[in-house]
Length: 164
Image 1: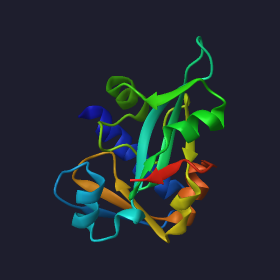
Image 2: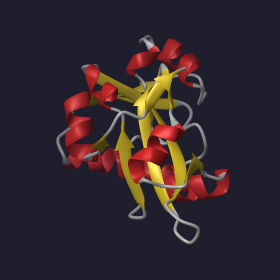
Image 3: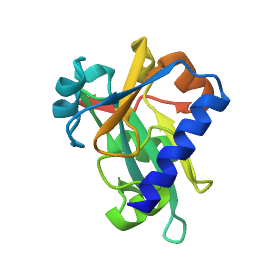
Image 4: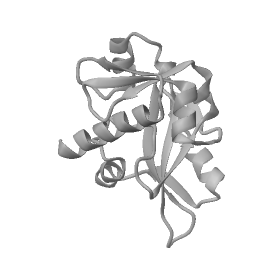
């Protein structure tokens, strides 16, 4: 996984550059939010679940959106579609999502690492003092102060979470 390793190092460099309050957490390899939350020992609401979406405002235009919601919620695709005034919003094809995120499925960061990706987060992500997410690999996560995530990632905040 050379791309994931590169993204992993970019993440660590970004957090260090911004003097973020973070900690790396080792665990068994998994990309399932509920399972990894149990392994890390926190409620799933403290996980930042990230999903790469494709939004089509019209027949010719595509934009890529990294949607972030609390780990105990799901992305409301209709809310995303309405936010962008688009005719369609859906989950991005795996190959494209992995290319844009620089990681494999199940390890997407809640930080847009590609210039063609917009970061849209549900305000509920800010409700916890810390966020947990896989560190661009399945066997290690990051515990990051929520305020530092918001400062570094600079998400657009809009209600996009639905009950799981």
